[in-house]
Length: 392
Image 1 (cartoon, rainbow, N blue to C red):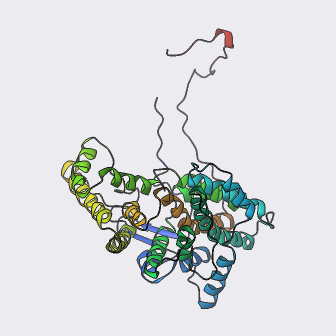
Image 2: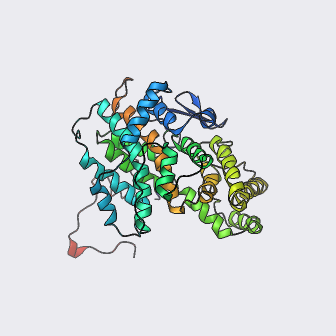
Image 3: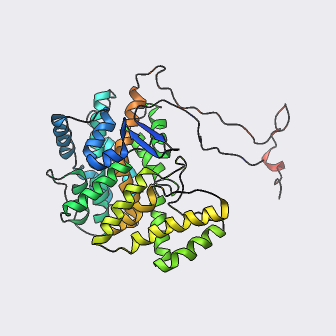
């Protein structure tokens, strides 16, 4: 008998005050605020504060939060040394995951599991993950590491560390908006992994390390890499229609189209499409135009052949956006982590210190056993010498 896996779809496992998704109407809400309002008016730093603390900061709170972030950007020399000892072929997500676990060794208050101590760790991790990602890219390319500065925004500082030069304000703003859009998305696979680990009362480092591992999979955070590989495989605008037709005819999936929750347009994809269009005017319109055509043809063909309404998800336009920004393809998922670390931390804090009754409990879902059955007395043990291969 084949096993089944429902992926916990539509199974409610916990309450949360952090994020609300209305999949039918295409709404994404962070702590009561519409994602479109935050993308239009906020910054990543403000949004991270909102997710962690539940309210938008006042001026003094934001200044203090920014100061803590900038003071926490540098990573221990030993963590950098460990990265330098890795083969240059190591995947950026593997390097990020191991480096996060390395940071635990340098936490002077490691045994303090109080809420304040965990919030301080959360802020430190938000600050350090961009430094790790940028440092690894330069290490593997045999370039000198660019140390973080204290006078740049979160988005600006990452691009500066990655390239070794200051980006234009317009570029850093576009990147900042993309970080806001990716910062949180309720109980997705990586966030649930973080919460499940946190429910064991493991450290925030263990929880974030697990979340990074979950995000690395191509069905989750790795999907935007697959989108860009798809674009490169197509190669040209004139090849898009045939490629999409062939893929759908063979029962394959067009990456970047469709979502597990949204039954209409993902609100993040609309903003990312506009950002990709804006950056393409400065760089090269090719990748945006190809992405736009993929959306149009996929929607039309899926409706004509299967009567299905399908919409782009967050990965479709983020791929061409990051590529146009000159970001290496395999850094797409680490950049997702740079953003999503704010949401992960908020969920870990909520999981560890929720005030609602009942208090958080260790996650322990139930499985339905469909394996071998030898009757009410069970299977009889056969010694090694007398065993025979089953179903040769």
